[in-house]
Image (tube, rainbow, N blue to C red; front, top):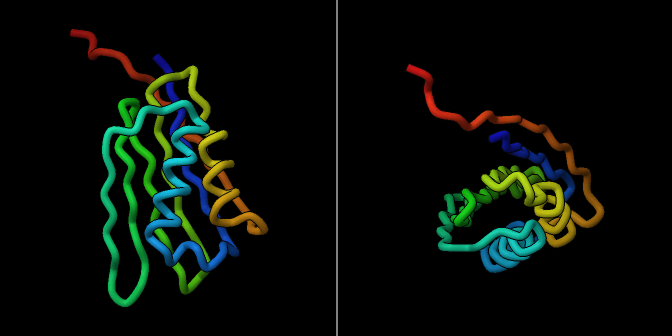
Length: 117
């Protein structure tokens, strides 16, 4: 099975990236847009600033890490179902957090298969 992991750098984001609930809402909306099933979440706030939020999915994960001093969010999306849309997930998160910002994506294709003896 082939799956794609998407890493996105979102720049010039809104002040919402400093709000843990806004990050959560964006990540959950992204999961829904991609067709994923949410099974858990955890957020960690850093001192003096910044938050990492992980949404655990039946299909893998969505992770957002903020750099508010640079108005930046780093996003990692891995959906272990090739019929789901990582790009729809990224688009929805960007719509919530960086509507007027720049979104740069990197794609990593992963081949999932058992080791051959």
